[in-house]
Image (cartoon, rainbow, N blue to C red):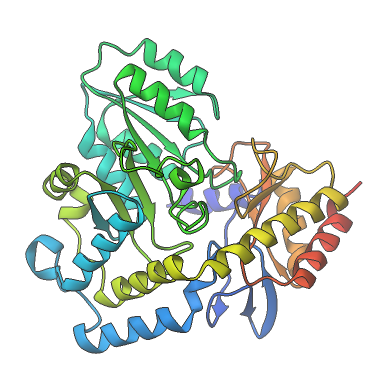
Length: 395
């Protein structure tokens, strides 16, 4: 099996070899690695709920009552009251009649997409959609059509030529994970309605972050303000980012959820999430509903980091297609993969954890540092990071 060593050597020479770092202890604005503390600028623990006492206590109590594992799939013996309570909480948060849990966000996308469309259908995706969306499209067997990023006009052009397909499913990230920009959801909904297409949005990086009460992109755009608001959009999301726990979900109509329970292979043929994880997720959602201060602190840190980057790195791309960042994700484009790795390593030596993002996660020539800010970061931590970063890549 010489190809194994050859592939690893090729990855190393091109700056694409990946290695793991072991974090000691809980996630937070700073983490410990090999006995040293590092300011963490790469975690999706946006609100800090992954290490909140409320989520930890809820998980511990559930483990005491239900044990560590679920034992089987939800459709066999793995379904508990906590699973159903969590689904009801997700449906409430996303203003939908029902929701269905998956073990991961990846499995939610793969399972839902491959259940909704097949070889007679078309699935239309934004060019920068997440890998789990693309993999779900490939597994479905549907015709994959791609429109230019952040361009509802191109989406409409693609849909206008797609009348011969049985079903048309448009899928977009609502917050794009590598650029931090927010999809123009009102325009996308208008185009989908005009052409009779289903719409599915990936709310992984929006849930708990966007909207006055953390309900996501729809709330951010004022699309949940009345009882008459359109709820036909299929909402997918994760519990592993701002919620602070683990798992994925799809929210929508009761018919959609019942359909997925009977057709989504990644739901049917896998063991249910441990009850302790469900309990932690429930605690995280309750915190989103009652703890507005964490979200306000996060938005304050987003504004601060944007200001610091504009002052010290005015040439760096920071916020994708948005002129006023509202998400915690700031891409700092470096270009060459090897250089991105070198910059990341020098930041690490200075006490900042911010790994380089390289192909195939991003296109060749667009390697970057994906900076993500948390509610718990201090002004001193953010300022120190940007000053160190500017010394490394500034002109």
